[in-house]
Amino acid sequence: MTSNAPPPPPQDRIPTAPDRVELPAGAVPEDSRFVNADLLPVPLERRDWTTYNFAALWVGMAHNIPSWLLASGLVALGMDWKQAVFTIALANLIVLGPMLLTGHAGPKYGIPFPVLARASFGLRGANLPALIRAAVAGAWFGIQTWIGGVGIFTLLGKIFGGWAEADTIGGQPWTLWLCFALFWALELAIIYRGMDTLRRFENWAAPFVIVGALVLLVWVAVKAGGLGPLLDQPSKLGWGKEFWPVFFPSLMGMIAFWATLSLNIPDFTRFGAGQRAQIRGQSLGLPTTMTLFALLSVLVTSGSQAVYGEAIWDPVQLVARTDNVFGLLYALVTVLVATISVNIAANVVSPAYDLANLAPKFINFRRGALITGVVGVVIMPWKLTETPELYIFTWLGLVGGLLGTVAGILIADYWIVRRTVLDLADLYRPGGRYWYTNGWNRRAVAAFAVGGVLAIGGSHSEPGKGPFPADGLIPFLKPLADYGWAVGLVSSLVLYVVLTGRESVTPGSSSGPAAR
Image (cartoon, rainbow, N blue to C red; front, side, top):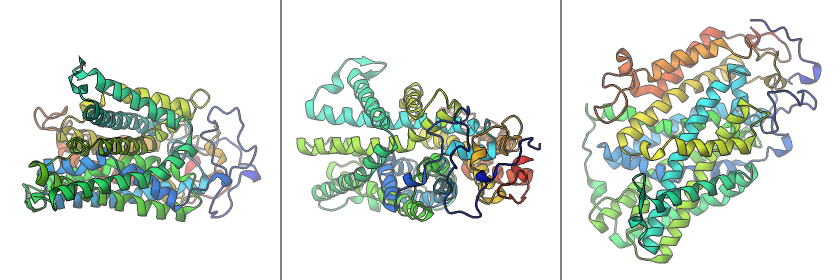
């Protein structure tokens, strides 16, 4: 379809290969239904996040209880510690690639993820990937909040006693529900103050959590007189035919752990001082931190086996074994800071923007954050974390397949079709080059549908261990299910390029694939 809109006026035209682009004053009508203050590009003077800010963001997000428990989930599935750490390290090196590719649009144009998605899906169609991302983030917010609430409940029960014996509501002590609710409210109170507050929080939270984790390692090592026998335990799977059927779905699950951020990382990089800051910051912060944190978790667990005669994978349960009140209080604060750090940054910022994109005139960033908080409760996160099979294979595998599909389309459109050239003003006004057919790009929707079916159509569960049929939702696609994220990303990327065509995008013109 060819757009009927006239060519953009001269002041909207994009300079050749600019490092950073700013929206000219008056280029977008303020009363446009696709605009609000949170979705407009960040002004150049506010794009000031440095390499340290991005590295601190990742350190703060990676150092949390679910990250700690990733290695334990893999060991529970039969891996030894070396296989678990290797799987996590490889997964984070892989996911760093799309993270940097989608993050490029942030410092250059100052736009969040749902606005970037308008270039490929259309001004209205962008709500499809945005709402998928928002739903996933809402569920993750609930999972992290529940785990944080359980941590607070456990440590306070150790300090004051009697909490676990309280009357139950819905199968859990009412004191646990209280900790969950208070933690939930604290998180939303912080994010309600905006992105600048988040940056300041992450800057000091990152080193605080690192110190807390190292203190835990030293404490266990001293009590153990060295690290225990866990490091010498052989893999139950070996490196043969029993290992690979567990390795590949586990690798996809570990990728899916941060596949959410590989989509909405522009929500953060839009504040970047330049490409170098976001590339260096993310490269220093993500793969190194996640790998070291996984290694730290197995070392501490190793020490716990030497001290207590059993491997205690949950750091909260481990700390609860001490009678030192100061140590318990320090651990309580560390759990609070670590969980808030990751949950706000990874699981509230994105859906707040995504929901704002759905109805810019009615939902702003703060209202979007509150809606996310409600979704995080309704999703019943205590059910999603009951078993490693349900958590890693079902939840993370399903999420990874869908988000990989969206990532493939974003990367194909921004890097291959448009070669990083966007018309900033047309991302906010109907009738322009990103309007397509009534606001929807049918090529992107088709690529998403096909890629999504290929990625998750073969989802299967062992009898009694998940919601899917043992033969898969679509049996002949079952062999692809273990590679859901990769299948979704590659298939949607290739199909989108084939459907759209590699045509040149002339800055400032109304021609090119966006207007077809």
